[in-house]
Image (cartoon, rainbow, N blue to C red):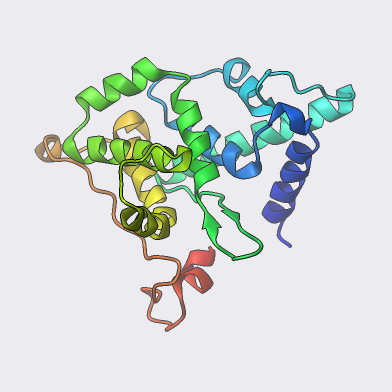
Length: 227
């Protein structure tokens, strides 16, 4: 087990130790949530977003100071880890839950976390939607449509939902990259003047079960997708 895997396992344990009746975030929800916080056009201080992690009341009910310090420290470490990934590249690697019975990838908790972060600054996101290029606007609408699927409010047909369900895990990183290009332009770097009027399109990464583009003959998730 790598150092990163051990860190995430411990973070998962600490979140699991929070009072379940208060409905604290899972690791996947937290990952989507901090991604949404960091993608927001406006800076959101930890004092505002942290209480949402602990659950509906915003009170973590830590048993002692040691548990409080370790849990808060672990959450902030993950926040900084995601921020570091965004700084190095617009690509993020979402942490999805997996159904132990069917081995199905569950993207819904991650999207729920991301959209919960959006609700912290609704006006900022609305302004971004109004000013965004067509690509970014369509991407933001798609992310909100994923949340509607999760909450049972989607107007898509069952067949359409089934198709989106299969594609969503691979599409979400591309969606985030496209949004970041406009919501956090300082991360994307300077855009050449002759391209300023062109919408940004994030390059689609190979699907997890697609053949790896390196030519190894292995599936992407078992080759370059592991790094």
